[in-house]
Length: 114
Length: 113
Image (tube, rainbow over all chains, first blue to last red; front, side, top):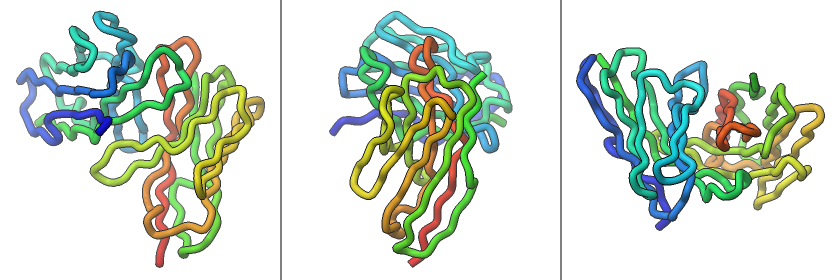
C-alpha cells in the first residue's frame, strides 16, 4: 500500500531534549516536505526536499533541521525543542518532477514540549 | 504574501443536502489549487487538484471549480452523507517556492443523519 509513515505518532517531552521525528515513503517520490499545523494558523511549511541531498527552508524553519540522505526518508530534527514547537506535524511527499502531482500526507505526529 | 481564506469556518447540514464550500486566495501566481479532507487523528487526503490552466475537476459527488483571475474556488458536494463529515482544506500551490502549499484554515463539516 502506498503510504507516508511518520513515527512517533505522539510524543511528550521536555524543553531542550533533542528529538527526531521520522518520515518514510514507499512511493519512490522525489519531493518530501514537513508542515506544522496550529489552531488558528493552519498548516505551514517547515522544510522541503526536491531530491536526495537537496533541502531548503519553507515558511517557518526556525528551530528545525532536516536531512535527506536517501530517497525514502526525510527526518525532522529538533535540536533543542521549546514549548512553542508544540504542534501537530505532517510529512508529505509527491512525485516531484511535476508540481501538479498531488501530495500524499502522513497521519501526523502530535508533539508536546513541556 | 499568499493568503488563503475559507468560508464558512463550520457548517452543519442534514443528510442529502447539496452544499458549497468556498475558498479565496490573494495571489493568482499559482501552480494549482487542491482540496483536501482531514479526519480527526488522520492525515490529509487529497480530494481534487485543479491545475492553474483548468476550470474544474470532478470526482464522484465532488466538483471543484477554479477562477484564478478572481482568486476563488468552490467545492461542491452533492447529496451529502454522514461519512462526509470532516474538515475540508483548500491549498494553493505557490509558484517558485518548491511546490509549497499555502493552506486555508478549513471548513469543519458535520452532516447529520
